Length: 460
Image (cartoon, rainbow, N blue to C red):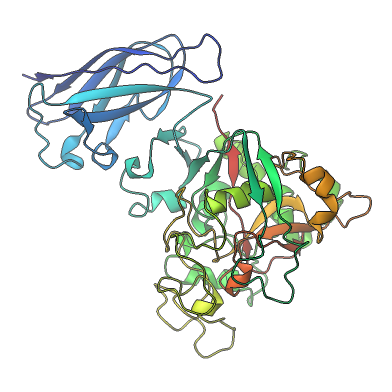
């Protein structure tokens, strides 16, 4: 006979929707004494909501990592109505999983669909609807322990940006700004006002994610010298970032080697073509993926910090080596050159000093849980490239929003074929990998460029 357990309920207002109040009531929790599976039932108000579960003892959570094996009406969009049910397997994650009567409470929370939890997991097979979690620790199996999150799914982190005005650019004090090519106008400081939250990928898009989303591997089959082809003979290729990505692939088509036609047909904000990375992802998942703007990228990279920091919070230094950077940037690991006797023959599993890209998530994340924002691969942005952004100070200093990929260049006077790239790569020194550093590449060029995607907060 199952034992009755204490209950709790939580009601949450749906932010931004007048009159909508996703509410939870009649929460009950029962554990089967044999299987020890816990069943939680609840009623949801009339509004569709995203539902999450917390388990508390003495009104203190047992920790999200201990509540990860859940199924049923939880961690997803749930239609309003009564008789909702979810199950939890505490024996999978929580030591001492026999729950004593009255000692534990189930806290069921409903989130408005336009203000979801901080983490969204998008399955790239198109067979599982998006899942939502309150924090990284809540991801079943662990973000870095379960390769699903770096191959078959894409984990998106909510970036708190709505109504935020912040200072973008280089104050002049960042390490690496003494390089001869760094000019104040290139990284000119100005204020930017963001007008919405957004989700951003916690990782750079990986080779495995490309394969599962588009059904093909990413390399030029006719060119045996293309380094990206060699990746598929190496260990853990699925976990490494997509590289050698041309901008034209992202929005126009995934076979750019025979590309011809006008750039205007896929120019942002026009809809990406179906035969493109973003088009394929949208079709497969129903999520409106996009490249970030420069402002979205730098704001997320800084994560509320000042200038000149690595993801783990340590200060960037060009005079000393950081102990956890081999493979991230060349200063701390060496620049590999094909033909070098050491190229590709060192520890292939770690790809430490001579082999190029690192497995995504190899280094500590920033304050907002984003990995590899500095180094590994360059990341495309939607903005057209402008060398001297101070020339647009009247536009920028007003705090104008640059949160939708607005490009600063007038296409009648500026070349539309160069796009902004950010973050530096494994072959660069630290001056290229700073939060404020701006760089560019032609739309048909590739080099060591990958991508990190964003998408709107809220679900239909």
